Amino acid sequence: MIDRLVVFGATGDLTARYLLPALAALQEAGHLGDGFQLTGASREDWSSAQFREWMAAQLDRHGGTYPAGAREAVVDGARYVRADVTSSADIAAAVAGDGPVAVYLALPPALFPRAVTALHEAGLPKGSRVVLEKPFGEDLASARELNGLLADLVPEQAVFRVDHFLAMTTVQNVLGSRLANRVLEPIWNSTHIAEVEITWDETLALEGRAGYYDHVGALKDMIQNHLLQLLCLVAMEPPITLGERDLRDRKVDVLRSVRLLTEYDVVHRTRRARYLAGRIGDRDIPAYVDEEGVSSERRTETFAEVELELDSWRWAGTTFRLRSGKALNEDRKEVAVRFRAVPHLPFGPGGEALPNVLRFQLEPEGLSLDLTGIGSQAHELTPLSLTAGMEPPDLPAYGRLLLDVLQGDPALSIRGDEAEEAWRVLEPVLDAWQKDLVPLEEYPAGSDGPPPPSPYEDGLQRREDLLHEPAAPPDDV
Image 1 (cartoon, rainbow, N blue to C red):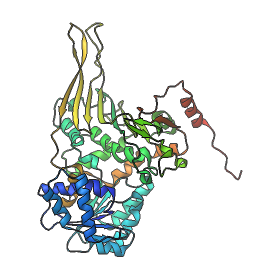
Image 2 (image 1 turned 60 degrees about the vertical axis):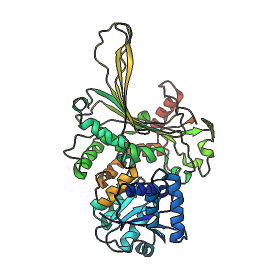
Image 3 (image 1 turned 120 degrees about the horizontal axis):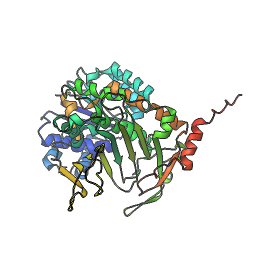
Image 4 (image 1 turned 60 degrees about the horizontal axis):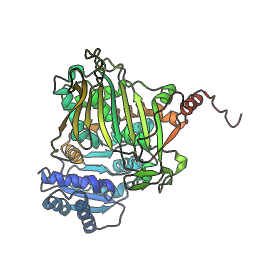
């Protein structure tokens, strides 16, 4: 187990909100030995004492549920190095020490190529590991380039492209429910399942993240970055083991089976929108284009929806809908598995049987099953719902990921070919949206998103017109 962690970008929001509480959780659980050392590296001209003071304040704010002793142990063992992540000399000073080191790049993704190049120039001790937050690259070409840079630095087994969604208890329970219950696995296919909807809707608006979000948007930030991972866990074939090779092989199989969308498909099976001014609870929300730091010229979407199909024996005929939006009227974060209706009802006109829906609630964590039963009168059907709570996890999601990094278990990280396949799936959408083949709709903040499209509305007709318009001639013709 590695006992040295160097975090570049150590004074940022990711470190404050997630990494420091995760380290406190690991300390409390006894996973960090007495010799563990945390080094923070960033551009601020701080001393180690100033960094520790900042750490203590952030742990009080974001990790106050952990015992004071655990928090103090994390703070007391930390040191700080002022560093430019593009400078090989600065990086060499930050990682200096005995034995292998885990290097965590808590940085904007645009800095990854230069940081990895500087790491290569500085050199890392044998056995070191590199951790990168997603999104991994900005498109397929940049993901391939970054993979090449990492391959020159450390072996693939030492690269951790982390996604905290994969360490969430409910996400892990998707696998548990499927693979450990005889009643589910035989019907986990297109014969019985009509649709899988993977949703991450938030009441949160931009919340000061324009510097990152306005360059990314909902499609890259959530669907490419996280929701495709959930698709893989729902749709993968049962692996032989949950070891890193078996699990990640099956996830890549899912992405390879996704039918690529044509321009016609993108027009009819994807949507994008951004929020207007509105009200959410007691908050007045400005229009997205009026948020500080937003450029209206980028036409960044705050809502994205994509329908995909898988060309596989198990899933031919099932629709997978991935959706995410900001500034909506409620938080809805779930995987909803919608089963097909029964072929015949012998109950007469006494009611309608709604399709069964198995829901994995992601935040807050929970599990529910929508069924149909008999009501108070004979032959009268009524909806039923079974719900189950989740035991609180031993570690928060980031705690689980950091422990995997320190112990060298990459099963829950993203393999290089998987990162590329995820971009391959969504490149047709990115290309068509860049051409404005899909209109950028609008919805009021505090609503449930853009209204459902109708084939008779002008918006869809405009989509058809855009799709069939001839390309504009070059300027020099």
